[in-house]
Length: 84
Image (cartoon, rainbow, N blue to C red; front, top):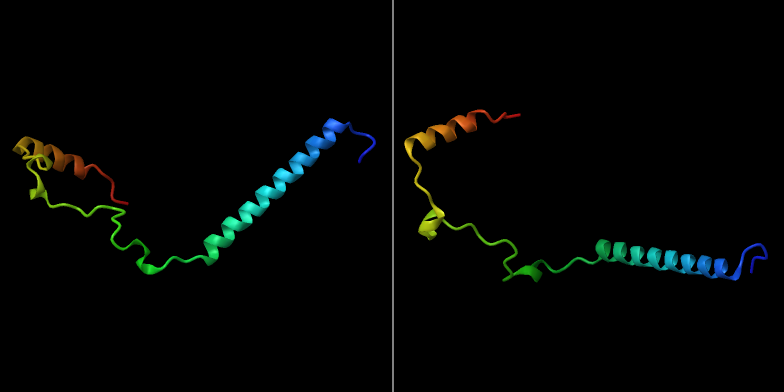
């Protein structure tokens, strides 16, 4: 192919060109699918992706009674958080 480079370099160059072509085609296919493939609105019905929030009374281990000192310490901590 090129008289100034060796056969191994030509094979490496061909491999890189094929790899780049496969990458570009794969990227184009991925972008095409994400742009034009819109799943049906009911595709995720019945599938709980994020579980619903349970109430505090769901299980006794999920709630903690704070002492007065702990409540005051927590209130002081909350007051130190900047609100911007």
